[in-house]
Image 1 (tube, rainbow, N blue to C red):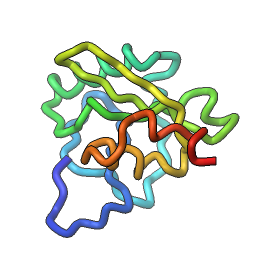
Image 2 (cartoon, helix red, strand yellow):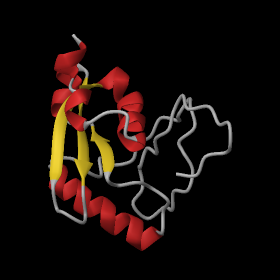
Image 3 (cartoon, rainbow, N blue to C red):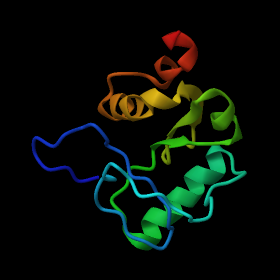
Image 4 (cartoon, rainbow, N blue to C red):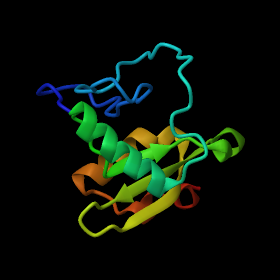
Length: 126
């Protein structure tokens, strides 16, 4: 994602609601409500990673697909997300359950290398 110098990092993620759209900037808040279908519903981390890789290749979107979060059925129950760190080079995919309210900060810290994925676990936050 391209960011302007000195940009506010309150939100540094792209919320993908359309796999045919090209994304080149971070999502703006407040975000508009969407009625788009759940593009990744019922898919695991590996399937989402593969779908995101194809999405970036097809749309030339400027999106980092090595680090992402999945809102799933459990997210509604306990306000958590599945945080994913994947490597196209090694094929290794690691996941941890993280606190929903900390998602943006966890993703940013993973991206800049301040945290390992294990440190994003909501169980450590409590």
